Structures are given as structure tokens and as C-alpha cells.
Image 1 (tube, rainbow, N blue to C red):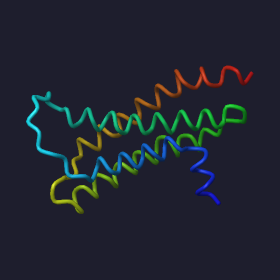
Image 2 (image 1 turned 45 degrees about the vertical axis):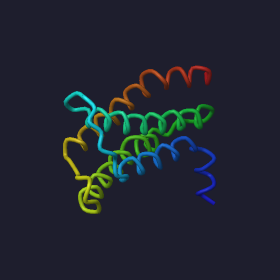
Image 3 (image 1 turned 90 degrees about the horizontal axis):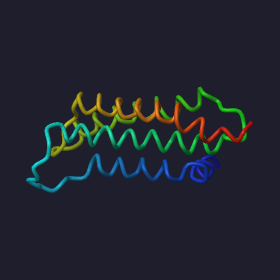
Image 4 (image 1 turned 90 degrees about the vertical axis):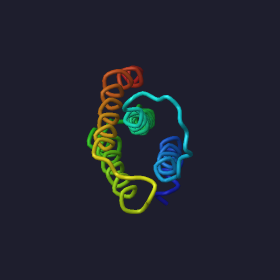
Length: 133
């Protein structure tokens, strides 16, 4: 069963995805905290950067002893989170009355994914795969 395989190989990634779905659709409480301008975009950057980063880390750890399939990594840790975030933004716009989809949120999501990819590729990948040789 493929579902069991993914649950065993990517438990943290699946947990982060479930948390992001929850955070994207729950009705937030009204709080009047003095937050900085663009705080919402920062949160989107961190949520999707964290999701992509965890996907990268689990992928790199799961494939550190075998050949690294870069196409699978790019698909799973870059393309899927970007497409997922687009669907979440559309869902917020069309399926909730207390949330709205925002193109700048989507741009923040994409920026988070690219930042996580850069960090994973140039920092984590060399550290994780250095013992392979």
C-alpha cells in the first residue's frame, strides 16, 4: 500500500501539511496585537518554507544511501507545495466567508518554497550526503 509507505517515509511532512491545511481554513480569533505591516506575508513565507524544508529534509534523509532522483525531489518539495498553496488560496477565496485568497499570499508562499529549496540544496544536501562517499 502506497499510503503506508508514505506515512512511514514522510511522517513529519504529512503532519506539517495537515497543520498548514488547518491553519489555512480555521477562523482565527480577533486579536489587536501591534503587528508589523506584512506580518501575514511573513507567516505565509514561513508556513510554506517550513513545509518545503521538511519535505526536502525527509527526502534527503530517505535517499542518502541511494541515488538521488532530482526530478522526484523537485516535484515533491517544490512543485507540489506551490500547486498546493495555489489550491489553498483558491479554497480560502471560494469556500470560506472569513478568509480571502490573495495573490501576494501566493507570492509569499512561492518565496518560502524557493528559500527552503535554496537552503536545502546548498546547505542540508552537502551535510546529509557527505557520508555517502
